[in-house]
Every structure is written in C-alpha cells, then in structure tokens.
Image (cartoon, rainbow, N blue to C red; front, side, top):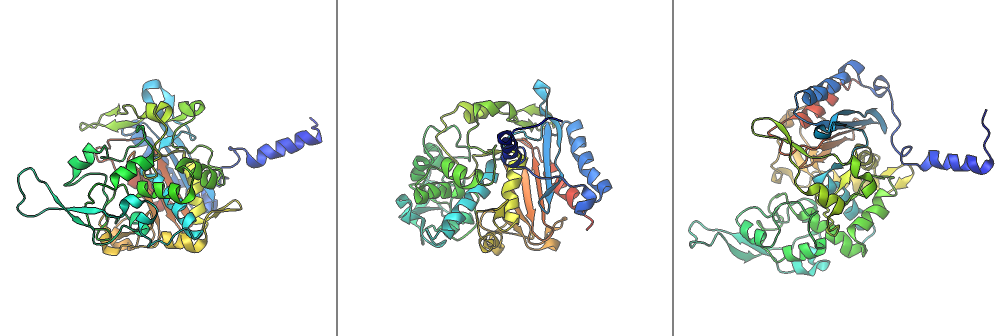
Amino acid sequence: MQRFSLPTLFLLLFFVVVSPVQAQFATVKPAAAGFSPERLSRVDALLQDHVDRQQVAGVVTMVLRDGKAVHHKAFGQMDPEMNQAMRTDAIFRIASMSKAVTSIAVMMLYEEGRFQLNDPVYRFIPEFKDVTVAETAAEMPAGMPYYTVPAKRPITIRHLLTHTSGLTYGYGMAEETYREAGLVGWYFADKDETIGEAIRRMATLPLLAQPGDRYQYGYSTDVLGYLVEQVSGMPLDQFFAERIFKPLQMHDTYFYLPAEKANRLAPVYGLTDEGKLVKTEANDTTDYLHGPRKCFSGGAGLLSTASDYGRLLQMLLNGGTLDGVRLLGPKTVELMHQDHLGDKYPAYPGEGFGLGFWVLNDLGKYGELGTEGAYGWGSAYYPIYWIDPKERLIGIIMTQLRPTNGLALNRLFQRSVYQALVK
C-alpha cells in the first residue's frame, strides 16, 4: 500500500475538494431521482436519431434533479469535418443565455442597495437622459421612414430587465440609422471598442417604442451589462469572473476563450434550406480566440459548458446559493421568475416574462409538457435551458446550430425529459 506524507495528503485533499473536475455534479441513477430509465432512454434515441440523420453535428445534455445529474451525455461530433467526437466538456457559444448571468449581476447590485429597479437608467448612463422614439404616420414624405418624438418617460432598470425599454436589435423602421451606427444584430465579439462606447452611441439613436409600452427583444441586456460596469466600477468580464464564476466554480465560462481551451470550442453548423448540415461559422471562432477582446456583451457574448451553466442554474433553483456560496437571496430569485408583463409578452401562449426569463403561467394555454412556474431561455445558436422549481428539475441542451431550418429538437428534448419523469 502506498503511503503519503502529511503534506502530500493535504495536497491531495485540496485537489479533491476544489479541482474543476470535482466541482461538477454528482450523478444519480434515474430511478433514484424519480425517472423511468426506460422512458429516459427515449432522450438518447431522440438525440442519436437527429445526429444520425445529420440534423445536428453533436449535442451535450444535462438534466439535474435535486442537484444531481440524471443525464449528462455527449452525442455525435463536435466537428464532423475534422472527425472530432463531441465531449461533455465542450465549450459552446451561448449567446442570449448570457442574459441570465447579466440579470443575476444586476440583481446582486440591487440587493446591495446600489439602485431601485424603477430608477431611470440615465442616473448611471447620462446619455439616456433625453431619448427619442421613432414613429411613423399613414403618409410620410418620400425617403423619410420615420420621425422622432421625445420619450414620454425615462427608461428604467426594470424596463431593461423586462425588454420593455423600446430597444430592439436595431431592426425596424430606424434600421438604417442603427446600421450607420454599426449597431444592427446581437454580435459584439468582433468590435474594436468597449461595450460602453457602443452603448453610449446607442443612446443617441431613436427607440422603436415608448419605454414601458411593449415587449421588444433586443439590446436591453447589453445596456444592463454596461450599467453593471458603471455601478460596480469594474469591467463586466471582471465582475462576472470575480463575483459569479469564481464563487460558483464555473471554470470554463468566458467572453473570450483562453488559447489552451481552443480545441474545446465547438464549431457552428447549420441546416440549409434543403436540410443539408454544413459548417456555417465565418470569423467568430477567430473573434472569440484572437479578436480585439474589448467588447463584453452582457446580452449575447459568453461561452460556456453544460456543466458550468448547470451550476449557475442550480444556484437559482436553490434560491440563490450553491455549495455554501450565496449570490442572491431567495426573495430576489422569487421576484426574478415572477411574470412582470402579463399580456405584453407575446412569444408563446401561456408564458409571461420575468426579470430575464420566460415564465410558464398557464400549462393549458402552453399546450406542451411542463410545469407552471418553470422559467428559462435559449440561444441564437440553438441551446435552451429551463428551471422547474416545483419538480426541482433543470434541463439543458447544448449544440451549435445556425441556421436551424425550423428544427424542433430543443423543444423535443424538453418533452422527452418530462415524459420520463414518473415521481
């Protein structure tokens, strides 16, 4: 039997307790977590079928119940062109799943008393003091797509959290104005400027609705990211790393990837109109690895793994705490996944919108398997996640698919998980 000196034993204990591998989730047999093993195998069949039919290149799943992994598997290939197998620690562009991280950061500062949710944003970003709104009339002069009027009320932090600020992703009647400002679309990774520079320029452009009047998905969370910088006095990447990722032991979540992890970044594939799976990424891998590394998009800029993101979600499901670390109070988390919009949220019947997530309000209107009170979001690259407090359940599916050609795999995955839950 090998013997170790006392210092060596302490060192071994250190790595067991805090190493990135050990910081992940314990596994549990499906039956012990209330799942039918036979029914849960339908998840595997579903995902393997989509891989075999070349609808996706590869997929990583994570299903957690009571904080333990019931299903954490890799299917297919990370990069079929290179014959590179998918791996459970693959790193994915999570795009709008970044919004949950930014919303958490905002609510952490809210708990510290730095602001009220109904405070005007201009108190922290003065450029938003006198915003205008684009409007149109039945008869407009040729070449004049809109005119502007003063906003009836200031944009508040709550408006940003609920996407009722009047901001879109630059699309709409003022699109050409946004395009001239370099602000159309959600992608910031290639910008050779800070997020603050981009947001201050954005504040001079017209909104597409009066603040508070209606839900419009767009740059609101990117503005929140700059708000976090202004209030905390820290760059957004530093705030995330020090206040969220390090405490939660999220070792593989970044805005820009370290060189030594480049081989784990899954390429983007997409489905053509004819249904053929092809590699579609252009320069974004270069941007995330070798780009300017200056523009931290709180709305859509992060890279992560299924395990890392699962830790963030488990913290929320636990009421703001994980492994002895508390980021938020339970009442704050409760506020975040209440419906704040009602009928103003038009995306799916039966859903509302909270402070950063869709919220399932009415299962009958929703018309699919789920639980009232569940909440979640997704990504332009196709991953989705949801948190189900009543069932103590988290589901994540990670892949890189853009364009999708209408593929419904992410929703089918959610259905397959729920149909396997038997107690």
